[in-house]
Length: 314
Length: 314
Image 1 (cartoon, rainbow over the protein chains, first blue to last red):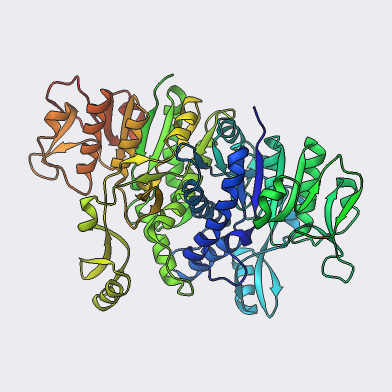
Image 2 (cartoon, each protein chain N blue to C red; image 1 turned 90 degrees about the vertical axis):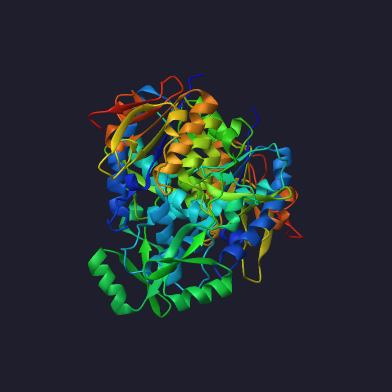
């Protein structure tokens, strides 16, 4: 069999910052992404993962606005976004690849350890903003953790480490048959075991770490994370910012990257490269084809010596 | 290969009439259904379809309550319910079948003919109720068809005939590998072609007709529709009501059945039996095992002579 390329679409590939959260904007952005993904499908087995942050927030807001029914838990909202986003990716990509090729969206449950230290330290903000009194009421009533968010408060939930993908065998079967698979949406639906019983947990799994687990589990030949910058930088946002063209995992991990954004991407990339010996890349959607060819973005590989910087980040 | 049993869960297997539309009620009902489905999985390849009427209505209400974003179209809401319901069925069933067995939820797009006569005669009520002035405003603004619903008005949408399941090849591959597949949720996401491009349509596909298409496409050995009555009756609700134990499609179709409920079930069953020569059954969830053995519910088969009535409907 040939190994697949696993591509993780950042949230901004589906909904750009500041855009209204409506279906039409999502579909237009997904259409742009689909054109790039179709090029990869021409030459590689393709597995697509994606974020769901804005979408799960939207569903939480809609649920809060309709008070005749108590709000749905995060695991169920996550499952809903997987249907929403998977559908649009599948339809738009299906419209531009050959008619005989197949795409399938697979609901993905990801197991976390119920004793993960993240459960004692919830950090990931989700859902609507509240004023202090409302936030404190919800904290008392529902046992939520809350944290300040500018002048407001938001619920924060744990972001535990993904351990295992429940549906990995069906996903592998589909990939081996040459079917494009959309899965691990939003980092997968967070679940844990109580004895032998799986249940949904109120958490959010980092999309990049979950995609990395997916890529390792499938022994992907390349694991690509798409974001809104052209590559990984040292000193990002400073006068000494430098674009990284290629790096060995050991060299890359000597730097600190932003914990909410580039940090988990670098962590996921390095772990994938160490475990599989294959390539990982980080870059921008519009450069996807060049990224897969190693000509754009940042390439992380065991065979690179140290770090090579780029003069022309793209 | 062995042929699968296709089981269509009625909406009331997931949410009973009058129950609050919350996640906990859905999960409890699904847990009951899962216990029955697990028994079938022990002896047969299993494919599960399900309704989504109450859930798609709920998402429409939530969307209407949150007016910062314009409401999502029906195809996207349908995709969301497929994630929500598929997740709960997959998790509950997964918790009671052997640990090495696999279940997968597959997002399903169903193609309808854009010239289907149903598009000229929308009949299926969806979403919230409105008063007359609001309904007329929405009719003018969005081009919706509206219809009276008691003292209120509701949007009505077409219910076109399902023609083809886009994901049938991946579904077949999974079924042949012995994986339990949850698909065609809510009758599938309604789509149509504009030239070679697939797009979502504002319609609702009858769940029983879509499940029947699924069962025919997979050449199922048995196609079971579960509902809230123990079997098909002639003269249902009259003094002359008689329970049907077994029937030939020709004999069954001589009767009229309620267009919104038993009618499409009988239509789907008869078409399945005629095209495949295999068995179809209609009955109640709690009798599922006996139904699959032909010992409860109504069995529709080419080898039955006319109609046989039952003394003890179950």
